[in-house]
Image 1 (tube, helix red, strand yellow):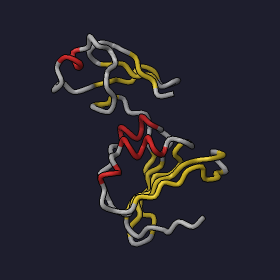
Image 2 (tube, one colour):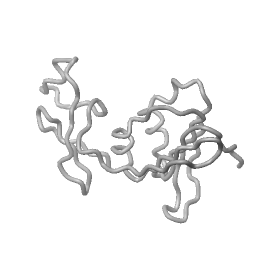
Image 3 (tube, one colour):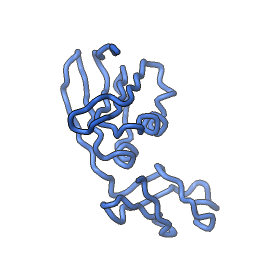
Length: 140
């Protein structure tokens, strides 16, 4: 399979195999007017298999959402056909409006305009808790 290189844009690399569509949805890539290529199950020496996403345009990325979905994602910034910057992610300490609290008694369920805020409670395995009601959420 041959997928063209991009001249100016972003390549999201080292996505855990099978998570590319979750990244696509979280970043609302369906709303873009540019070319977006999703490549699944690419052979990788480091990971065995991985997914990657190529975006043929410079956009603002929600790095908190990306870090939550997969903290091992690498963000590659491409300009004039060359890699100019490589960003590594980590688990965000705080997530705002990335997750929705599942607790029906949480204030965020009753008051729709209240931000959905989660804080990192444990790094291994990753566990987040609602800042209002302490409901736990993991992305294992």
